[in-house]
Length: 287
Image 1 (cartoon, rainbow, N blue to C red):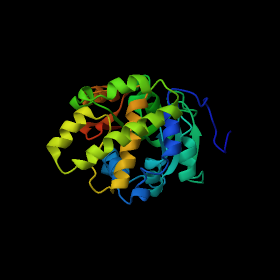
Image 2 (cartoon, rainbow, N blue to C red):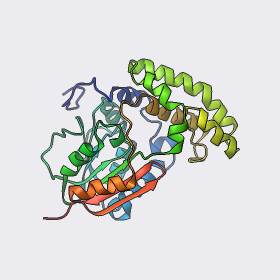
Image 3 (cartoon, rainbow, N blue to C red):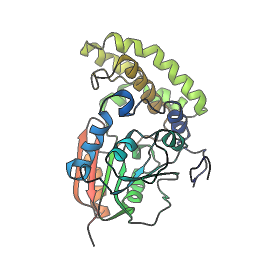
């Protein structure tokens, strides 16, 4: 136990850069910080109305919690939440949402979760699976934690023209190998170069579309116009670092995700494309 958090892994691993990222930018994606409901809408969409509105008093496992943008929504829904991450981003999560009667935090590997199988009403994992070594193995590990009658809620990157035509791949091949603290400085510099260009053409969609083919920086002026310029910059900075320093980046189609959940034995399977890739969920059959 370090800093009040149970640790089942060493801090140095393939997610180390994510830990540095979330500890530095610990609050900029919280709905309460940006005064919006972007994260809540994402959780609600992925869960579906039935699951989302039944979270009260449910035991929820949140895998890959990061600094807690989705932890906030789960706790706000009065769920009893166990949050974990492979990286020491758990320290940022604890800072935002301290351990309490309704919230525990621990650091662990997503394919070696330190609980007996079948204990959670809902297992939720958003923005994570594509960054693990083997997505199918990861999904299977998460599914094992779902109790009979419970739900698994996930999302995953899918193939897109924008990814294959951006300069991200070339930069990522270098930046993911550098020291995480150095990587943050690089991505801050890259963002400071390109973000003003995105801001300048934010109201001209054709120019923004052309720029996005060249720029490695993420821009949310069209997707989230409600964000202030400061928040737009912060989100660009955060997600640019995310996309340029992740060690693994996998893509799956909605058909592949659906088939994976079917093979695991899931029922009530939902797998559809969204702005984040593929949103999916399934129910584990009751005994």
